[in-house]
Image (cartoon, rainbow, N blue to C red; front, side):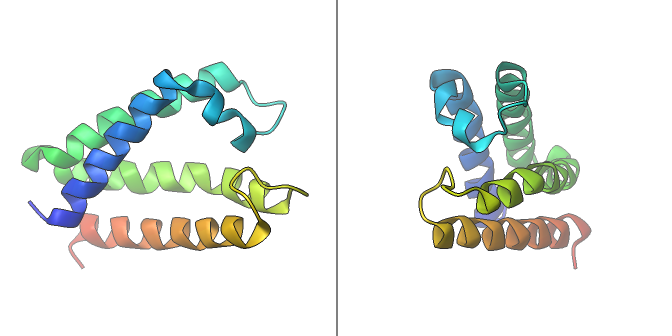
Amino acid sequence: MPFLVIAFGVLLIAAGAYHFVNPAFYNPMMPKWFPKELANAAGGIAEIIIGVGLLIPDWRTYALYAACALMVVFLPLHVWDLTKPKPAVGPHWAAAVRLVVQFLLIWWLWREATGE
C-alpha cells in the first residue's frame, strides 16, 4: 500500500468521524441556506467509507476515484469560503492556501487512480 494513500485514508476516516463528534465545527464552512445536519452526516459517512476503501487494496482504485469526486464536490464550498468577508479557516491567505491544496488533492487523487 502506498504510504500517502494510506495516510489520506486514515485522515478521511478521522475527518468523517469528527463530523459526528463535533458537527458544529463544519457549520461555518457551509452557506446559511445549506442543510447543515444532512450535509454533515452525508459528508461524514462518505469520508469514512472512502477512507476505509483506500485501506483495502481491492477497493483502492474505486476509492481513489470517489475521493477525487468528493474533493470536487467540496471545491465550491472552498471557493465560497474564500469570497466571504471572514473565511471560516482564518485569514483570506489561509482560505486561498486551502483552495490551492484542494486542487492539488484533486490532481494527486486522479493521478493515483489512473496510475499515471
